[in-house]
Picture 1 (cartoon, rainbow, N blue to C red):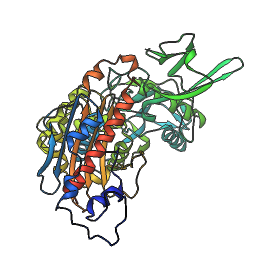
Picture 2 (picture 1 turned 180 degrees about the vertical axis):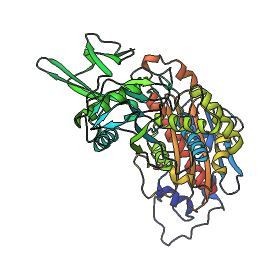
Picture 3 (picture 1 turned 180 degrees about the horizontal axis):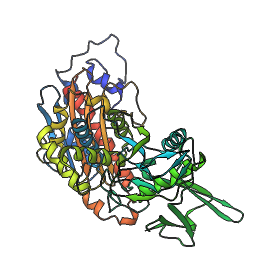
Length: 495
């Protein structure tokens, strides 16, 4: 079996009169073809065991596929085996946030004045108050600064404060990830540019020039809360150290080449947002002192506010781009609404696990975060299918990304007869896919496919976890297995 069954093969499977090969000599008269036995195309479909053997994954393969209308199981393998779900976790988080917060929920970032304004002078403190918005960016802060100016404020006699305690402060989502990966930033009640800073370098005649900025399409403000030093060494490529004022980075000179750029994680999100807001305020003639982080939000008058898009839109983007920070922030916000302020991500995930058991029928879900980045999480294919069936009528499928089916050369097929809307999940030597499929005859199925070689994953040194040897090809083989199973189910149960 090739990587993917083409549209032509689907049509061939449904036909009863195709020739199986050319004859050495053409007959003098046309021969009447014998009809193939009923269900021939289904019996010709590769067995699941053959598909799995061809993938050469090792580790664990588990899957389940069910009829969406009835919930009846159609086929499964190790359906009760718990394995890391990776970013399929975000599908559960999205359902959790929708149920607890509501599709129309919006997060709000505010600027508050704690004293009166007389002749443009604020006799009090100015507070940038985070409201848990995971989508806040530097352009939003520029707009907030413009609103402060429009209120007539041009001078501050008090302190500039940042309140980031709407959510728990977490230094990084998963402590086992390398320091420098941008998908593993800090979490708090305020986030800016997904808590990433843009590091860019260029080699000139006198060495390298380096910038650290908080860029968007409209702005590129330099930041003082993250600093990079180039060091003459080969390895490690990056080192990180935290101080109360900034993130201190070093990078190996031999790794830089002529130039380049990447996003690095931010570990001090409150100071980072305060740093950028201060720059934006200065561009409007408002001079602010360096930001201070506070734990308690003071009373005061609302000066400016930025509301996020509705939660439904935020979740659609989260599922499409698989953003870890968004998942953690909306999951924490849902937990706070449901049961109060959790101590950390793991405590919040435990609340979500109990909710999933009650509301989704997931009897053995053990998640340690809301994004799936932590590989100590475990989920079963049976549980995931139960959740998908339970949510079939609430419009959740419309939030999922359409997964393209591919031809034998790996190219997406726009005319493929099977439609798949699902959430992918990828860690090193872990690849998962769960969602809904519509077969050629219109029958709708829910499915979950989890593959994991946890022994291979455990052997990876922490410093090499961004791109370890063999992981990319392993994940590619897993994705081919996923497509082959989906096409098997389409033929067996939907044609």
